[in-house]
Length: 154
Length: 426
Image (cartoon, rainbow over all chains, first blue to last red):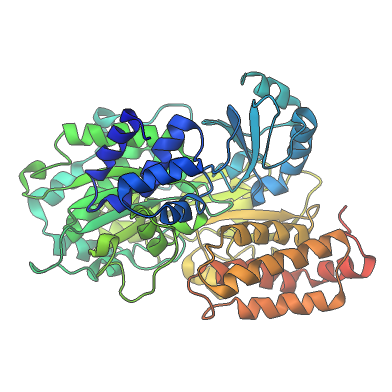
């Protein structure tokens, strides 16, 4: 069941567009914000609420990079793997993160602390390599700084 | 002579952007006042057409021309929409971030003016999800603009109404393609639409719609304030205005700078970016983002404008260049690009969906030392099969630009991978 808070937030979005269906992405964002990820049940609940098929909701949910169809850890690390960060050595950072956290791209720490994901260009190529943890952007990162950065996230 | 930089003059790296009051004190919203009191939409469209402003998102189409295709008579379908494409995601591109975070009111004023020119009823900022700081700033600035009467009903007594919303995406390169962006705004997968009908006729929710890039819209208030001739005069070439250029890669001072349209590649790399880091030599340049053809040292003196870069065999694109240095393997570099494009293909049409992963796998095999001589021919073949005219949108043809030019300029590197059965840069 969608919570009252979730429903209210979705209703607000419905009020801004010509038909309910147009709020699928917003609804997915809202539910993910409350639950951390989008489960099969969440897909069905959103579909019910908007009056469309679960398959249609899932086709949207699986299309976008930042809608998580699997559970993620408490913090999500998005490491930029695009061209400027490639030139400036994101691969070294990736190796160091793998070594420190014992996880690779697409995996979550057993204690649920971090999920590590590759991410397309974060738009700060003049400060490559870059990564984002939750909503915090880190630029010009060196391997030496990683411990201090990771420490901030319990 | 000090060069004029209207778009970034009031952007300071170490200070938060101007709020509404500060923006007004530096001449902000004067253009909107001028238009609301003394210009009809047709005159504003004509002014922008005369300024020779071209779209800064990558395609370089005349902005005034784009606007002129929107139905303006009383029978035009309503509501009409104006959308700012702020879904900056072309790898190597970071110019719109500067404008979004540095002066959000400039974008909002540009959007209101553009909306007035096409008599739009609703405006959206379609913002990249990753730009959290920009999202907060734009949300705040839109509210300030409403409170000051620059948005809402009967703006400045002109009888013109406009509602403005911020939409943040959930991550997909395709959203930058204007028809795919419209699908995303309608809550659908971001797949491209067939053209015609063009968005000007049938866009968002089937209504007349204009999509303009952030930097393009930011130019509009300055054109209104200073005139078309002034705007053209800012440029070193026939394309009007300044351009926010950028350089990233192994240069001494990577960054973005607003400069007259048409500065040379050499000036950008050697003066503004400080030249190459010591120990590295310039080997190639993608002049305008990941989907543009390589240029090399022989092209350093070309002007960075639409026509000159095209004449040299590439595209100005977003004007933010990525430098390939002598220590970076061109095959690995292009593999990284193709990995991005294969991942971001929306899957709508077969050549792109199937072809890009194939290209990526061939390049990976070459990098690992498993390449065969015929692989190079296969790559050549793909640059044809995935080229213009064979795919639904410009994603795959764009992906082929750096590949075809890498094969042209760096063939020796490709051949060495096959010959030595390893990457010579490892």
